[in-house]
Image (cartoon, rainbow, N blue to C red; front, side):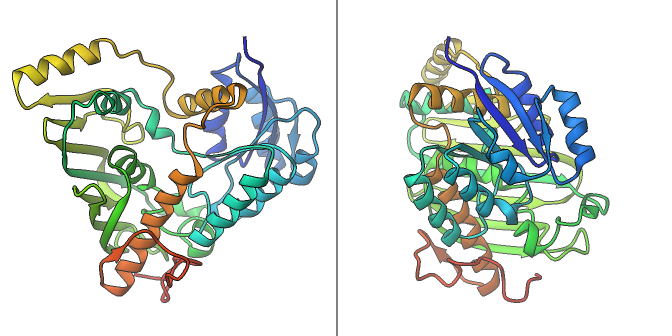
Length: 360
């Protein structure tokens, strides 16, 4: 039996979802501490999740003996500093999306992570749904063939009460709108399935709420493998849903989960081009063995990587691809031009993807 890892969760908004996942993996993780500037939130989380301590001071948290992992769930503008401090303390780090607020910050963190004793794991928990993992299995077995077209839809609803949280809806603290906060997971799944992005053309607008950042997006994407993709996002849907559809040479795949925030989970629909392909799909999927999904799925794989010395399930390279796509989307929308990837250090948005006017 591998050893339990002692984890501390910092930031108790989405951090409570992380705590639920750790609580579901008691053989792998010990919730050693929770940390939030709001003492009442910390005390409540300590009680709810059986944490060893509730702390308000981040430096004191990093100095705790026996701590293995710091899981950062704070507002996006704080991520870089907190990551760098935790890595410098010799700890493993897990961090919510977006990992940083620019390509320049990402590369600085990559340098720090390379020198550190601990590892850095960006959060992309949607990857570990059983539906998406079935598609990855079919890809690995060579059943998909040439990719043609992907359509990604993120239709959620965010109203005024959501933006009452002071850091939301602002460039300085949330670092962007629906392309950074809500659709980032579905867009990561596009890259997870079809590899790197080659070219982006984007239209963004703010129509649903009186906020600084975008809340609707229509993006046209060309992948490096030659396939095309469309990304459609709104925060004004009357009925929330998320939908992925991948069209390949030999099959079409579509997510059919009715839960907007569990897009990778079953059920997914797989349709082969011929009866023979249908038989191969059925045979392969009959042998599929589901494992933990969402946050628990990613955390279980992180535990295996740390204790077994193997590759992390989500890497800095994955975060780099995600942030490059975000950078390209904002630059394209601001300039009205197509943007080629990768984003080099000479790119005008390399150090800061925010538009000059700070409003669409």
